[in-house]
Amino acid sequence: MIEPHGARDAINAYRILPPAMAPYLGYALPALELVLAALLVVGLFVRISGLVSAILMVLFIIGIASVWIRGYSIDCGCFGGGGDVGPNGVAVKYATEIVRDIFLTLMGLWLFRWPHTLVSLERNNVGHTFTQDTPDI
Image: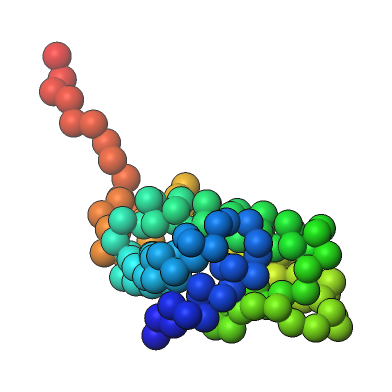
C-alpha cells in the first residue's frame, strides 16, 4: 500500500531535497518501486528494471550515508515508517541498511547483465545455443 505521507516524512527527514518536492516524491517513489518490483517478479523488461533498481539503490545508499555523516538519527523509510528517531543503535542500523542496499544493487546489476531466467517471460534465450545457418559454398 502506498503511504504518501509516510514517504513524504521519510524524504523530508533526509534534509537533502527541498521540502516542496517531498509530497510529489511521496507518491512517485513508492509507485516506481512497486512497478519495478512487479516487472522483476514477472520477468518483463528485466534489463531496464534491474538497472533502474540498481540506480535507485545507489541513491538510497548515498542518502543513508549522507544522514549518517551529518549525524542525523532517522528511520530511512524503508518498508514503511520514516522520519526522525532517537540516536540509540543508529550506526548499526545505517550500516545494516547500506549493506542491504549494496546487496540489492548487485542483484539489480546481475539482472541487467543476465536478464533471461527460466521463469521470466523474456526467457527466449535461456538454454538455446544459436548457430548461424550458412549454406555451403
